[in-house]
Image 1 (cartoon, one colour):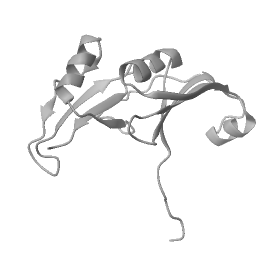
Image 2 (cartoon, rainbow, N blue to C red):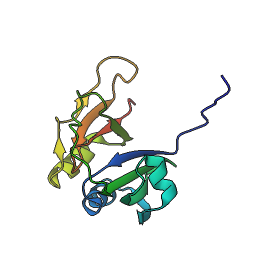
Image 3 (tube, rainbow, N blue to C red):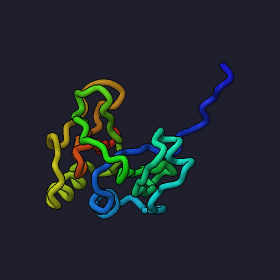
Length: 150
């Protein structure tokens, strides 16, 4: 094999409202906005496979990493809401590391964030002794908060 992957640059989510998602990811989860702009460039439309497109976009830096979260709100062509519940094929989630999961859970719960459950202790496998919880962003996209075992 001659192809060689050398890293990861970003994870992308299509969202329904960029400002609402920025409020969630920046103000609640603490990500840093790197840039925000409207994209209608021909090269971009060709990459995504639509000859005429308009997208409100932003790149955010995930704290403690160089990894970016990319958010796209499609103005044109408009799309339909996907069923992104975790059991459905094609769904995904982003796992974010936290140092105190219970404190993060309480803070976000008090601010109205929807969780699938309270934090759960991991009792088997390589992460035994760690803690994890799934929460939902404003579009129902799953985000995991994960505290590594000590």
